[in-house]
Length: 163
Image (tube, rainbow, N blue to C red; front, top):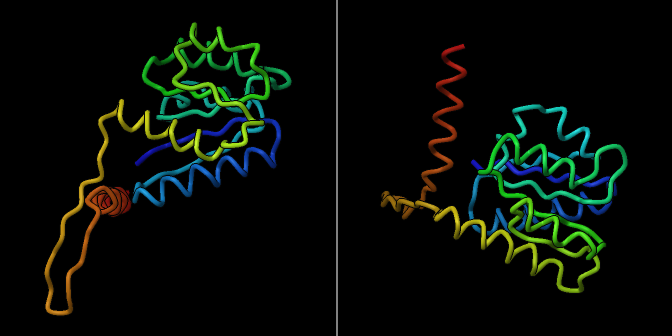
């Protein structure tokens, strides 16, 4: 399962971005969970748990703790989290290189949906991720099972049974 975080102080933009990501992941038949945070401070309150996210979409210009400081803290905890800067300002692109962010997305871009999709494609390629499907033939017809979802359901059942 992909754990994704969206951190942006503009709640409407954060919801729109969450929807774009959700549409992409659903279209690719990926199992995912997206959490949203309204500030870098709220995101970092997760402590070490912030490293559970595979992808963090991070606004740069936020109150209290900005995206640069949040990314620095995340990098101190993990080099494995894919950080994507999402901002209206071009001025911070050099910080992106320093913090090894995978992409720098501009909010005002007319092709924003395409750039988000391309960004996630690049992450999937780096992770060498593919959806494993198995086709079963029944009397009633063929049924395609996504093994990632099956494993997630089994894990949920096992942990519920163990509790």
